[in-house]
Length: 136
Image (tube, rainbow, N blue to C red; front, side, top):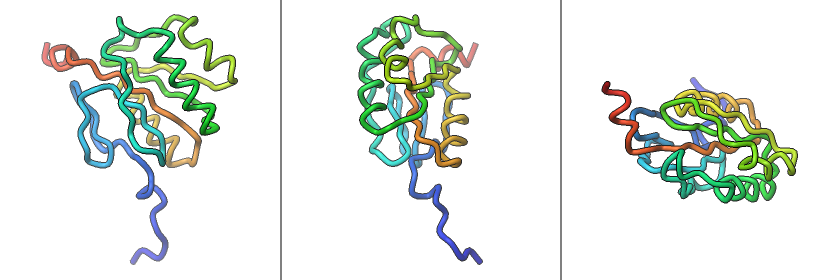
């Protein structure tokens, strides 16, 4: 018998992920998203790694500083790829950490940090070509 509420049930948790998608609280997303523990999931207008710009990371910095976020987890797609430092300078200027990892590691790390009660935002880059990468 459970005598206390599960605090994780009130948070946005990544419940599944795969080639070209993530599920957050059982809702599937096939486009890039920003995920925070208690805010609504937000579309992140980053269609691909090659299309990333400083504007995408400025949006992150704005959201992170408004909500007192400690760290940004950047899921760079099916492959680990690092954005140019100039793109992440707005986060650095606000003293917000950024960790880059592939999409799947980012999903797992986000869930762990949320369960620990950390103030985190995940910027998950979901590219349509990921489905082809996993089947090769």
